[in-house]
Image (cartoon, rainbow, N blue to C red):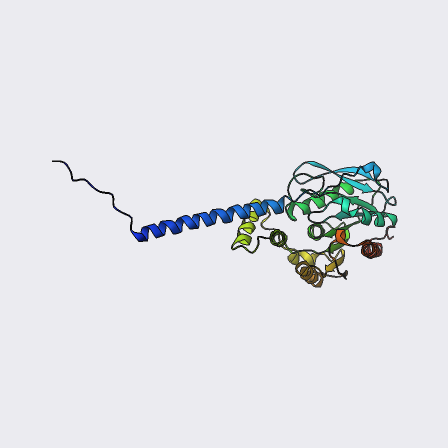
Length: 310
């Protein structure tokens, strides 16, 4: 005897609703992850800002000097010679900038007989790779100091660092590990690389979307898992008593301006603070740059004299 024919059962309205909701949630999650991955790529792979400048065309008789980057590759920087045996000022550019943007500041320091070194962080200028928003940049800056300390015409024990945003974070983080950094200038600084990530996501214009900041933050953490224990600058700033510090607080950027102020207040002496209308050196007018450069030169002459004290 044959079995009776079984007709397919219709799905209940509740089951269809659950399936539709799950499909919508999956679509939203996929869209969120796609947007977050795109934003993370955009922030960590900034557009190249390199200007094609031949070393031979630069004033000040600079020389090319190679150093070892954290990824094991050899990078190249420009060394502008000052007085023989004088300290060296390393200029650490900001996010989406390059060493070429700092040539006027380098000229002002060299005119006062400092040795000056310019280079490009990873993912900027002529350097390949991606930025890590401060983690690898700190190690790169320490590698630059180690290389410069081996040069015969430079003071191996006295270095100064000038840095802004990305470069400022690297300067303060490196100074906590390297006692040969005797003086440093930090402008528009942030407390932790994730803070710069959030600022850049907002500047792209998609930070207002729900959960975007959370996803990009966790994606950034996964990419840099080995650096997860790196403390914020506010936790290490107290160890910089051996370095003179000048904090440049911008009025046109409330976020970094407040962080710069708080780090200044936490920092041990000797320290100074300068308040400027514009935090970005590159965006300053020529008259503003000259005043700014004079302040930087004055600070380094005070705390890092060209002639070593006896």
